[in-house]
Length: 85
Image (cartoon, rainbow, N blue to C red; front, side, top):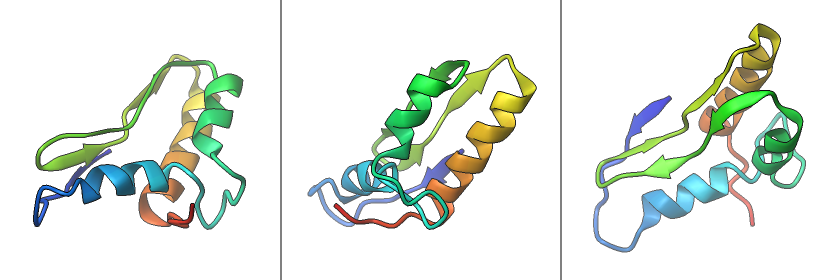
């Protein structure tokens, strides 16, 4: 998933939001579901990154069920983040 995140200034808000988004969502309220799924997944790649005008949450796996599980979590942290410390 890739989102256009045009910054209003150079304070790093999109990057901060990227990290906060991976700290929990409405459906996955546990602390840091992103790091927990890294340990339990068959993923071949998982990350989150912010560029000058975008934020993306890429992942890959060779297992269909794992892909569905990861997609469910990624969609929730992307569209319904809790944004709490």
